[in-house]
Image 1 (tube, helix red, strand yellow):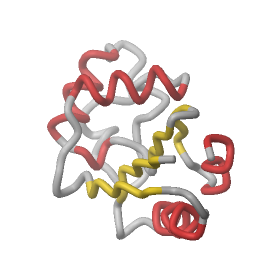
Image 2 (cartoon, rainbow, N blue to C red):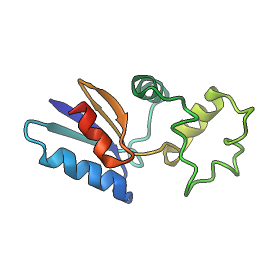
Image 3 (cartoon, one colour):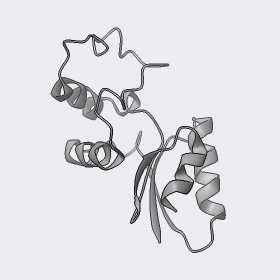
Length: 116
């Protein structure tokens, strides 16, 4: 099985999720450090849809300038949030993991087990 993780090495939950993936037998791991390789809009749309989330639900507020940018207001559209996320990957909650069994936002990190 191939598992792709959109990873931030500075995030404890992301590191713990990566560790689970590294220890899982039979998993070929693809690590994308999204601060170095930003998200493409189409990929975000696909990840969110496959995880059953909206862009608003996947918006990282803590530790970001999402509120200052006005992204937490009720009248902000999904398109506006997606535009902001593609411009600044730190606005995407982390970590996302994709396997042939689906996509999960792995908060907490044990959610990754659902798709392994």
